[in-house]
Length: 211
Ligand SMILES: [Zn+2]
Image (cartoon, rainbow, N blue to C red; front, side, top):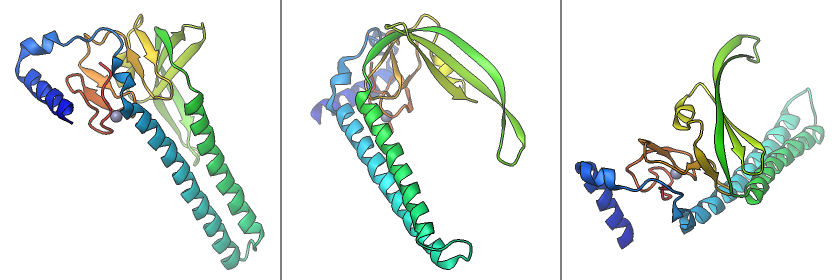
C-alpha cells in the first residue's frame, strides 16, 4: 500500500516537472507483468464469464418455459428444451473463452504491415452501411501472423508502427510495445483501456501499466 502511494506521488510530481517526465525509462518490456494483479484479473474475468453465462442460461430456460406455457405456437416441454439448448450454448461459449485464455501463451512479434479498408456490411433489415476497417499485422516469432482488426476507430492503428517489436502476454488482451518512449498513451494489458503514458495504474481495472 505504501509503495503504491509513493508511486502515485511520483506521477503527480512528474506531471509538474518536465525534467522528471523525460527521465522516465520507457524502453524494454516491463517486469510489472509479474505483479499478482494480473493473475487476479484473469481469475476474476474467468469467474465472471462463468457466472454471467449461467445467469443468461437460467434466463433462457425460464423465458422459454414461460413462452411454452403462455403461447399457442409452442408447448412445453418443446419450448423448455429449446431453453436448455440455448443455455448450453451460452455456457459452452464461456468455457471456450476460459479455455482459450488458459491455453494462450506469451509470444514476441514484430508489426509488419498496416492496412485501412473501406468495407460494407448489410444489417439484418437489409440496409447497407459502410465502415472503415483498421488492420495491424503482426508476425510472430514462430512465423505465423496475427491480425488486430478494429472497426471505425484508428487509435490502435495509429499506436502501432511498422517495425515495432511487441509482446503478447499469455491470457491478456493487448500487446506490449518494447519501445514506449515516443508514446503519449498506453493500453492496459489486462482490460485494454486507454491510459495516459504518465499513469502507473489503469484507471479502470487498477492493474499496473506495463512500462
Ligand atoms: Zn485496465
